Image (cartoon, rainbow, N blue to C red; front, side):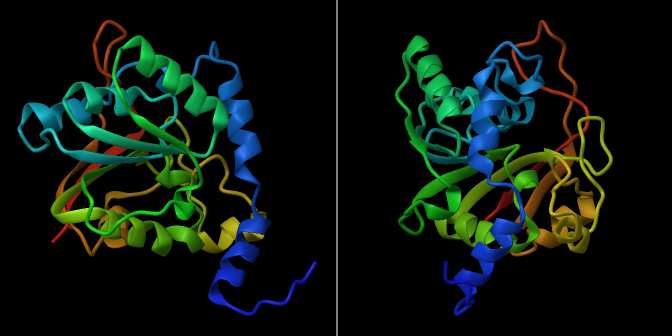
Length: 234
């Protein structure tokens, strides 16, 4: 194996290798569908439903990053959107395809690393991420932001849900340096409103708030311990 670092990509790959190889972990995570994982329910995020109800989102072209079992991708499709949904786990993609077939909606699901997908610049009206970003290592954040900005049309929206720092669901408060000292994201990094504004400072913030808790009888997904944030491409 050639361990010489000759380029920026070599450096990123080296830093990737310090942390766990994610695909095996996520396949195992999604292999038992009966686990009591809150977001395994087949309901869309409450904030996503709100964006449509307020008229912020309309039928258009959507890219979902880390689509999991497909609950939000399905909602977008049911609202008339053309949806490209990407996830690293074969298990989650298989589950999402089954759900989409049951709901009779067409979605372009892709089993891939989000940093390896080919995207035509300015393609999407919306880029949506529910629970992917807080599993992105610090050295990949610039790649993530570049992906979002490149994918969006001018005036397009980026929406994210992610862990609150020290929140009920997790949200590790370790520093970026400590990620590499421990060689771990400690189950997912947590963020403050200030950090989100700073990280996505190239985008215009529309709304940043805590996710509203939903009841089991509700038609939406909502739990404590998550941020919901909506940005617009300038």
